Length: 130
Image (cartoon, rainbow, N blue to C red; front, side, top):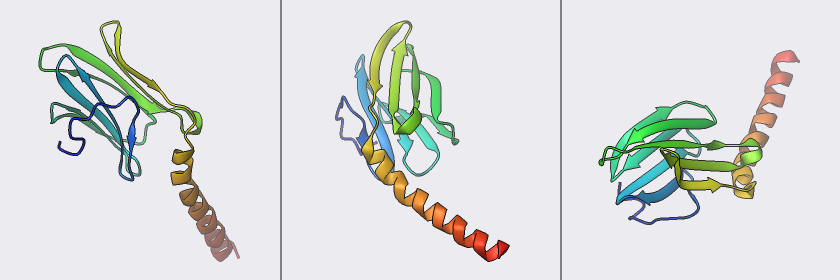
């Protein structure tokens, strides 16, 4: 996975297609990403896709095994009002923890879709219901 170029970040990387968390644990690069406009969540370890999930749930809770045999529990999702969180734990120790604030950028992505849905619903209702 050459998109992130081995960059370790404290905050998520947001693009039109993906919301990505990049961190390192015991020499393994771990990338957790979620589709911005599609229902896909992926976990990559050392450029290998180890988990993919397609659903509209707001939270992903998955346990993966890194090459050393250690299991890591990754919990990722959205709280109310667009707040993002991501936690990675091994046994009882926390490897990575991010608790986002209410993100205005997330609402700026959603606002056009909400307006389009409202206008479409209004015009369809007036067309079909008279």
